[in-house]
Length: 180
Image (cartoon, rainbow, N blue to C red):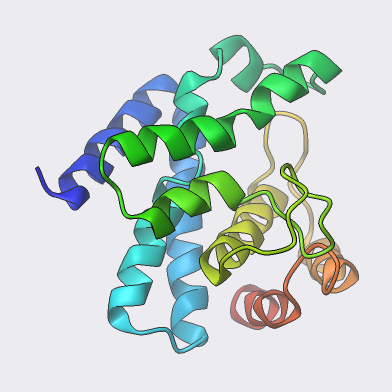
């Protein structure tokens, strides 16, 4: 089975398990591909990036739906469980034979430049940095269970405010130029 087929099957599972997460993943994949193109990545790199973005939240298949679909804020315990989706996604993708660069995006897509992400890392791939900005942009623009959508001005302000600490400055700027 090809990696593309595996990715499609995983996406179908995710859509069936939690449609909001599946649709979010599809939007993040499109956003990430557009950012990658604007950053002049090669065609092959954009394909890999798009697959990585599509599967960035695949570990949420391992998170109870009572947590995924909970309206409002999560408790500290629920939040700790939710954070496990990154490592669970990494393990799932690795077991299925996905390339390491795709697996690492699942693991690192909540890392921040300032080291205050889930894993407290400061060294992670450009793919992870792109997916992180695309992920945050999608949540800000579409909202989620715990957050209403923001206005264009609010999103622009957040991208600028977090540039250099949370977000890679070049990627945040490209995102602003492309989508706002």
